[in-house]
Length: 151
Image 1 (cartoon, one colour):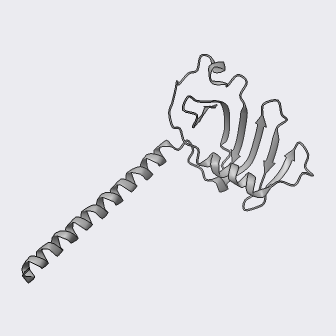
Image 2 (tube, one colour):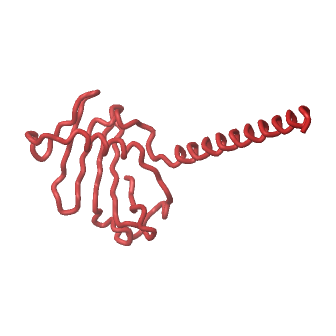
Image 3 (tube, helix red, strand yellow):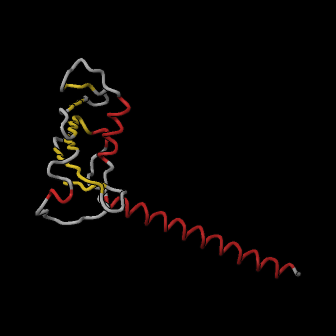
């Protein structure tokens, strides 16, 4: 094969590699953009100052933290030492919560979705005094997600 033919094939190869790389980069950008569009909240996990978690038939547990400080339990007993990693993860998962599918804007019968009474209630307060009240019910039909209600 002559040098010009080899050079031409090499240029075609470089164009194909660049097109593949550009397509993959564009696809990854679209995936990130679609995930960002599904996010429910705009605040970060670090801005959450108070979390209250209430399980069905259990007393509420409240933890608070100051900016860049550790979590501390205030309810039911302030002498309980919190597991820092657990509360930090709860805050991170709350801040990153996404809406995979909206079933109904107004639920006429919350009992159908396990929301009367809810299996889990999470309340949070952020540094800018944004309050959140989330109720979680049954697992939906695909067994991947839970029904939730944001009040």
